[in-house]
Length: 458
Image: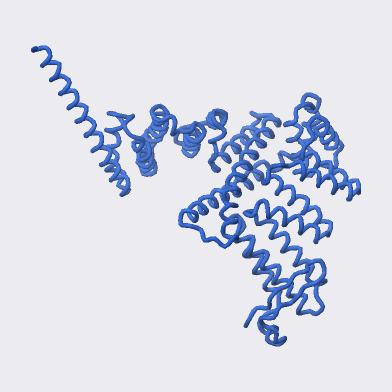
């Protein structure tokens, strides 16, 4: 009987002890959270560290708010103290991965740790080799969640630095460039497709909800960031990937890679991007890719070869074949734009516009086709009108088209606004509208444009 009573008391005390510990953890979490939410990070530090050490598995908030707390400490300290907080932040992410692995993507948090070390590389005495390995390991561990624009640029920038120092070979540099660029393009496609749905909703006359607006802002911010680093990545690569470097490298490696469709595709793409298409090697690579893995890309490049040979009608057949073979709408939109740009360069404005419009149907959040159409309108102003006033009215049409680019594409707001302002400055001004007495009237614009524009009221 005494034994039963003793066991009962033991269970009671254990239960009471567990409940007490849980209440203590909850209270500590609440105190830490309140301080952190009010940005009193110095006061939040003590309960954060207590709970982190006592029960690191208790709640994910330990790591969510702990990151803010340690970031504050890092930014407001120097010397050995700062280094200690930096190292503790990295340790915190490791602990998060240990206790909440399902909510701690390896690529995302690996990149965060590497970026922190890169940002404080002088304080931590980290070499480019060490930092590059850190990013490379994180990328290889989980490329799907290694998406941070800044970290993608840092990753590639370190590769270039190592190449310049003689520690990386040209093939390694170009392969890493392709890796990063393809990753950026993948993320741009992801966010563009999401943004397209909201733009299509607006174009259909449906008002966006507050949640929609929040998502739209989020998608636009990422697209802006990826657009910025895309230019920075190309600038960082610079002349290291000119034809003088690419052609000998690809010539040397062709035999070893002639049955590797990915290698052939990347070589074609790089030679096209760097305008090395006049070299016989480009023809050789395109033909080989078309032999082992014909797809939309090879059809497009065959079209380029036909264009170079002066066979425009044949080239267009291959461009159309490329469009038929491409099943991804985002990639098909890019193909439409590429073909349109080639037609625009030849002065085939009406046909180019039709291709640009097809691109816009598939990817309405890309405003560049709007700017290209606006440019063609402006170039045709002198030949599309029967009077000086009506010819210059074409610039209103160009301005309207340019403004569409800024409305749908977050990366082009400034450029689109500047273009529209420039076009409107070339259109008839208020005094001329007053002299003509046609304010509010509609002007029909002939030639290939075949559109109308309303004269502004004054």
